[in-house]
Length: 266
Length: 308
Image: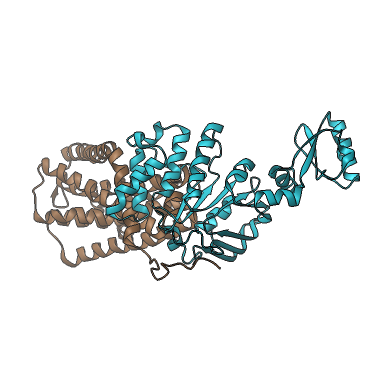
């Protein structure tokens, strides 16, 4: 006779809050030990981009697509900051946690399923991206960008895009056989997407096929939303951009869960 | 004191019940038709050489591996479907240290108090109790990477016990530790046992199994080759006494041949040959040293001399 589970009635469901909280608490407690370095790099990096492009290019081109160049870049770099503070930490952090530190083995031995683990990790990275992604905008404000109410939505846009990119990074780490595999993703996927997102120059300068392809670039939608948040929303176009980011997030989230289940459960 | 008090001592109930469990990795069958019973309130030792399937069995019990065939029940929950509910009441101490090394001792316990869903009101007390049990009260603010190997292992065990689990899974709890630390951990595990916590412990240290386990299950090539209390296993498989014969390799080979001819079983112990079950055979009286048969004799007899 096996023990009759007294608590059988309390069958545990999917995506339970205590499981998500547990994983988030681990990240928050860990963050308290490394927040300085991570905040430093997430703040300094976009500032350097902003200064380099803003003043470097800005001295040659003063206005672009109807904006002051510094304003154009200052808003565009939000998307870059989101990418750097979500996709990269997700890729490397996930890999380190399952292969070197074996953290995920410990977490999955507790009442947490892979789906909850991945979701909580993506939520955490998205939240960081929401904060760090907004930093360039603050820097741009210092350099003369006019403040506007719409800008208050930027952290949410950064969060949403960050969720998608975090899930993307977790997926890559889940499918990767080794650290070296990340090079292919960075060179073949992230770099082109990063350059062809309308961050540093408007897409209207590109051939038509590239403009069509850009519609599939989540960074482009993030750039557009942030720019419109700063300079005025554009009705249905922005609903489209928002829908693109939501779809990207949902798709990548499910892929990340699939990839990590394959990796962690044998 | 124990939350499971009403269950301890209830005879005949099983905390773990495995029937015909099979787990394959490609062409390799890691677990091959394993039956395993762990009665409530007992400590069962899973003993076997490296590669016998002990760690895979441990992973199956937390549904980190999914069995290809067979029935698995942990604390009355069917795996893998109800695994999360089972895991909530299990404590797992992994073989490989996976503590958060940049966090302090207390922070590590705090994280697991959350992961194991200990309510806000009881969290503080649970952490203090775990600190006391691991004898790390003075080290609560020390970062894990500053702890000695023994302290880390104690913390690893305390982390798995922070929520007072009904069942504890210990995967090679003392592997790679020096004898002093090992004894210290044995005392800790023995204290758990005496409180009535059910324990499943995998080990390839015979002494560990002999000292701590009420029942030992010897695994070889993914299945159970023998199970029972250590003394009973020894009596059944190795007899009462063994004769240990020392000598140069050529002499040892002769001794083996002689014993084989007399229908006795032998095993090599590196520098000597042990002839088992010599209890009634007086003609071997002068050839070497008589000693009581032990679990190691059984282990080598049943799992073979070659290490996989």
